[in-house]
Image 1 (cartoon, one colour):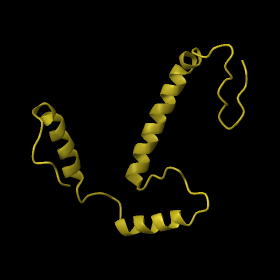
Image 2 (cartoon, rainbow, N blue to C red):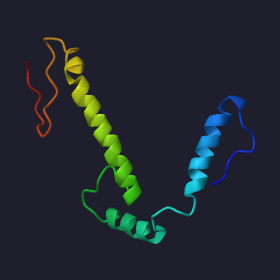
Image 3 (cartoon, rainbow, N blue to C red):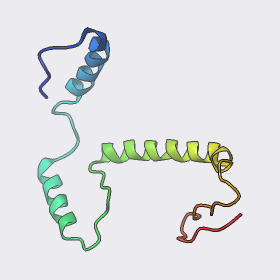
Length: 103
């Protein structure tokens, strides 16, 4: 990884963390570039490819954590979020359905 030669002093501590994070992982990633290329080619042949693809076991783990966190936030604040709907507004479709329903 290459970094800019100039830095902004206010960002120096955070930039140092960022560099350490990447430098510690450089050349230790579990992914194989040749295998990734084959997967990309396979994805290009799929009639209905995914809109999001997470490559690598490490990335899948991170994605799992992100989605779990987001789902927990949605569940925690569901009632508060839904409380902003007006009585005239159709409700959002329930997961797995396409039609909105009225309250």
